[in-house]
Image (cartoon, rainbow over all chains, first blue to last red; front, side, top):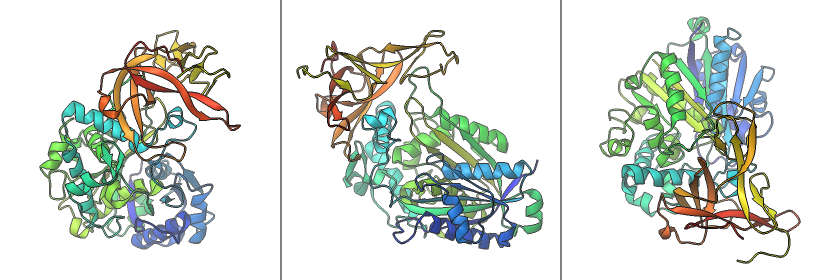
Length: 380
Length: 143
């Protein structure tokens, strides 16, 4: 079976784009990815588009903008893992031998859809009693603090780190460093979480172009990176309440990805994880097996997760710093991995990085640990 | 709070039974094959995949797993409100708002009791009955 190679990447600036829509943004990212791959756009044979709230046939509207309407395209919705799922579907279409060159698009114009806290689908029983995503993560934070003795100040170091990274990322939503005091003095959203603990409402798009071995041999420009694994799992309904301070869903999805890539967590040089909230980063990296349970807050304090540290986490700024345009998020993580692995990340470059991991997790449904979780591993 | 004369309507009849006498229970499924409980009602058991499930009334007392004070929400909910997860003896964890106390009165692991209370209204403007949890035990779930 062929391997899958990322041969071109493109990404809009993340932030507020009042004069564009999801199709405009997706088209801009797609054209940049085509230019980055340095290929004739007619080589692209199919496309997948991840988005959540953009309505019918958003992917087709992207293709129509750039002269590629007519290609087979499927829109993909998997909450915050939509873009990552689009990459997975695209990679499978290549592995299946159906196509040699496929684009995966992730796009979202969230500022026109939402203000403030995201909630589960209104049909959900937990939405009916007032569940909000910040509320759910705040409850997990409180429990984690109680179980592992994490302090509020330690938790604040995560947005401080991620916004410091974002300040070095020209495409990030936030470009300003913050202090622990800034986090602790920001507006309370859901106790103990405050505004700086939360990812923002962001517009943005990202695109990757994938190729098979034989297409890459002919058309890749020498900067391609191998997509070694693209794993997806859905949370299960538990027969008894389980800990909310550890994520079996993240652990199991990561296990699938490590096995597929033939590596272990000890081989990962850096990662982009789904830090929709500060506490989420803790739960993700511990679930991924990158840090022992209960120890990540101390590792952050020691600088281990900073650029230059033992295992940089969210060098792009993460969702908290770079922004979180739902459908765009998972693709943008892979864009960051590719640029880091190519050595193109400027002042936030991780030296010598060879293996990068991207983790997304999205959606809330009553009784399910998490709706959709993806882990992708890229190897230079 | 006293029971009203008008028949009370549940805000989510599938998940919350409200009886004529003002009492009520959360509803879920029990697997007749392996005994596992689920909230809300399911069509097959996630433990053993049996489709032989019965709808059961859950206990009205449980323990507080965690909570938060939500200060930003959708326009449907007036903020702030306390949101929590309560573990019931059947082995289900239920999210609900917490009433009748200040956040400082709460501690993880404490006993909580289901309380049926006015909770929004239907499209015709009739008051609906929903649930909250209140600290303490021996509650009867009376509105």
